[in-house]
Length: 145
Image (tube, rainbow, N blue to C red; front, side):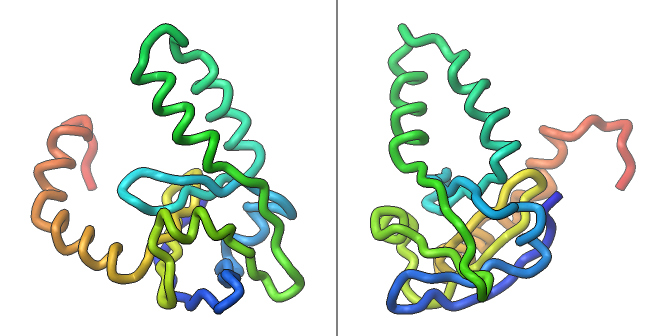
């Protein structure tokens, strides 16, 4: 499981340090792709396989299903960590997520998300007031936090 929020810099070659707490769970190779909200989603191979099967089961005759799978799979790339724990993020993914210098690397249960720091701060600020309302809509009322 991936948890936490870490700030790291991406270098001029497009390399980003993956937090040490995430490296073992990601394994030696993993998948990075365009995510929602203009961030990147990063999946260990085991989670990617599960997601791939779910997306393959979407109805091919539905244009929304075709559009989403096209968006998701066409941006996907297999990545590996170097000896310093860095991943080289391809230019197309850096452009999509507007990764320039400061990045946020988030643990989100079964995946890692990579955000530009300004985008993450904007998203968090915009969404912060709605978290209680969102929780009420999504979480079973019998669960106590």
